[in-house]
Length: 231
Image 1 (cartoon, one colour):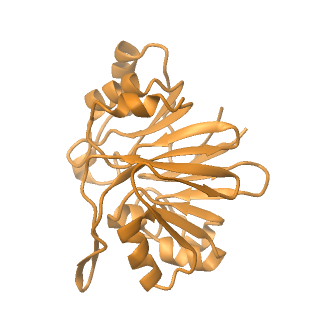
Image 2: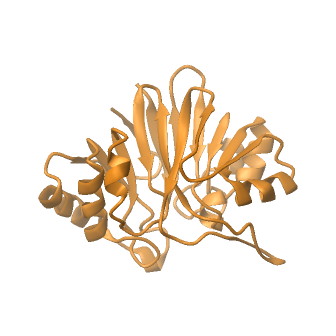
C-alpha cells in the first residue's frame, strides 16, 4: 500500500515501502506551509506538473542531493539540464514514462507555465497533470488547472486517488473542483493548493460538502501539511 504525504501547497511525497520515493512539485524552502528544507527530502524520482516557482521549488537541489530522475514537460526539462540536473526525462501530453517503482502519464491541464529568475522568465512550456501508477494504486495529480471536460477521459484511467487544487484565483475553486471530482470518478479526492497565500484562502469543508452533492460515492480526505494518507 503506497503512502502519500502532504508537504504543503501542492508538494507531496509518495512512498511504496520498497525503497522507492517520489517527490511531486517539491516546493519546500519558501513554502510557508512547511518547516522542511530541501535537505530533508529524500527521493529517487521527482515529477513536475509545470514550471511555476511554487511547483518547481527546490527540484534542482533535491535532484542533485539524491541523484534523482526528474520527469517533466520538455521545455522545463531543457532548463533543468542547463542547471546541472543530470537525469532529466522530457515528455509531453499523452506520453508515459517509467521510473523506479512506477509510471507516469502526462495529461493536459489548463493553466500557464514559466519559471521566474532574477534574469527574467525562463522555461516556457505547457502545464500538465500526472497520472501516476505506483505501489498498486493510480493517482491523478491535476497540478494547477481550471475545470475542463476532458477530465472525464482522465477518469477512464481508473483513478484511485485524485489530488485537486481548490484555491480559486489561479486555479479552479471548490465548486469547480467538486465537478472535477465528479468527472474523474476517483474513490478518494485530496484538496491542495489552498491557504498557502492570501489570494487562495479556502475552507476545505466547503469542498467536502460540494463533493458530497456532486459525487456522493467519493471520499474527501483533507490533509494538513505533514499528514499522510494510506489507502
